[in-house]
Image 1: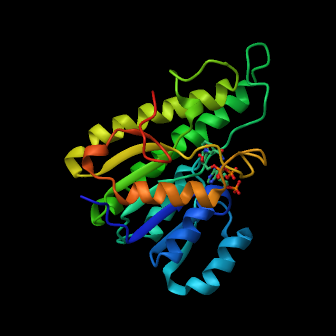
Image 2: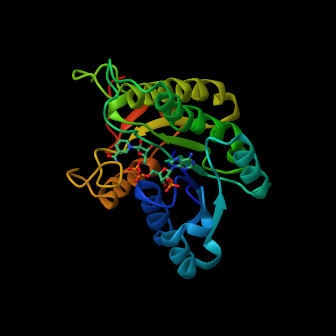
Length: 235
Ligand SMILES: NC(=O)c1ccc[n+]([C@@H]2O[C@H](COP(=O)([O-])OP(=O)(O)OC[C@H]3O[C@@H](n4cnc5c(N)ncnc54)[C@H](OP(=O)(O)O)[C@@H]3O)[C@@H](O)[C@H]2O)c1
């Protein structure tokens, strides 16, 4: 059964792929809750809000801060969320290889990319239960695939996404009884602040493709690791 996409909650919404999800879902006529660390500085989101009026709600949410996540969940109280998109993420700098590991940076990456996404899923499970879509998608990376890792390096980023993959697989199993579908999706290599100018995909292309995939997802997809075009990725 196709996913019912009426209200979408997007983290990391003020730039990059998250912002593009907000833009495209608004264009499609959906209601969007855009979560970002500093709404007062989120210029692009505030510009979108001028046109979207009541269909765009901007909320403060830092995925590393349990109190901030809980506060956003409280602000949204009884609201249903059909699709939760965990887009917030950080990559860290190069030099994440043996002999050059910065353990403080590594812990910070895990805090955002792994713990942060789980924190948000936990805090918004009740909102998802109130929705009709009941879908939680976390943006992972092909760099989190153990099977595809042939070059090494980027150990902090890779492990944060590999751990995210496992955490979301656990969530898929644990939340099945509550009829919530959880999965991870690789957006492709995308031209954003993180992906850089050389990336082959624009955010518009990546998000348009992921939206098509998301619209067709159902409980049978729970626990999957999908590419932005819907094909399965190797773990
Ligand atoms: N771009 C690619 O090629 C690529 C490839 C594979 C996977 N991904 C994944 O796709 C997702 C989006 O990437 P992107 O390319 O859009 O990255 P981006 O342009 O660097 O944007 C990252 C977003 O995450 C937010 N963020 C960072 N730390 C946060 C925190 N503690 N709490 C809340 N939000 C936080 C940022 O907010 P601020 O503006 O406040 O910093 C920003 O909105 C990430 O999970 C990334 O790992 C991207």
